[in-house]
Length: 608
Image (tube, rainbow, N blue to C red; front, side, top):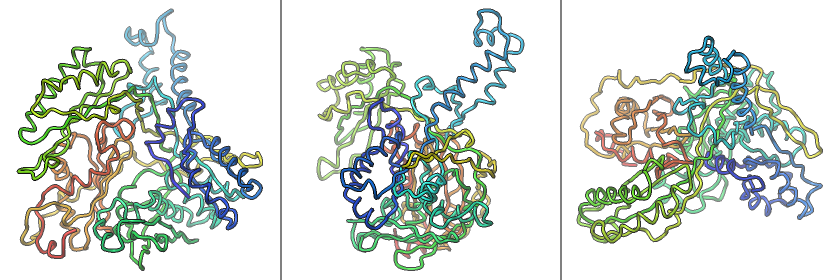
């Protein structure tokens, strides 16, 4: 099975015009050479590479089967129902119609004019309307009706569960193609089918929750086998950084989970790689709710980690949806600043760029205009590269004409003869040419508004029912800040150094939110970590990166971990971010580099 979907390609595929390929063609590249073995060994394939057009992907896969003479041997099913753009549009439009139909307005007066004139009954109608048809951004609380890009919506995808996949496999499908299902859905669907789990089973929820967590542990492929992990230096000594293997989730009939990997490959599966992936992947479910308070992981052999302590609860009545809108265009130009007085050189260049851009039009034509210094020049450098800092001019505008080369790139590079000492821009002008950008809005939709269907190879369609037993969970989960009530213990002698000498961490994006989890190597270090990483200390460690938004804090005691959710930290998310860290992967690495007081007797065990 494979997970092709992310918020990056959700938005890029949704914005494609009619007639363009809106599935992930790299899946076909991976599938084609394997098809004969898949047919010979009766291997089942489940992927979400359908992106915004799983039906078209079904056609492309069928062409592959025909070309290899396998069309009679392999049956294809595809999943639909994740495209909820009509639902969003109908809901928004019906809200307008409800207002017009249910409120008496003076002849010729619009609802806005009636509201301005305080026509009797209009305020109650508006309040009722907005309470029923409300879509609130999960990351920043903004209402869809207030979103600047509401009129430019081009796509909306719901995160479907895995039971449609299970139904397809149960019907005999060999290849199941989905679009936007939740990241764990391929694993959930395969496990439910393989073990013939039924909702009437007393242990249904617990088994589903374990399958859900198993899916999250392996869905990012090499992340759980050592990729993007703070144990990376250990990998070099343990086989090398090449050929890091793919993970395997073994899920038993009672929901037992063991994570392992391909034989004969490098990388590693250990408790640290599993903690890293789990802490990064905490997010909302749609098939089941996993209760993680008592989750733990146990090394039971070489490259074998067992999962413990996961409990299940009913799924919420809603599922997450991602709404894509055309956000205009963006461009950027890079300059190189070298040696001394970097801050003053940057200040000079920014002033000159602002003036040059204002001479060809008002700066308000950009809804984003940012100037950033990236990197630091070394003191007494021994080569020019180490003395060089990148200066980035980044802009976004709704209209392409406002950011065209004559309005952005040309005025900026024309400054080369009158700017700071050594003024030099990057010769690759491609980034200075406007490219489309998509804005992204994350919200919730009732699952009973979905039309989740399985389309079989023989023309039959299976309509999946929404969950019958759900539980409404608070949108805001309790934030645990016990660290502020812990008394400082005598940790002995301390020295100042980077947090990452003692503490592992992992971070990543969910919309414009950032998950960041920290954990220690030894149980006796956990109280120190809990005491150290209070919410206030997190704000202090973020320093200039802290944007004043809400921070949630959670503890996972059996993982020796403290997890933070940084609300709206990532400038709108991957599809339109103005930062280099558009995936939020480096939030953790920045925080690990911050200096704190470290107990010497912990350091004596060795630095990470």
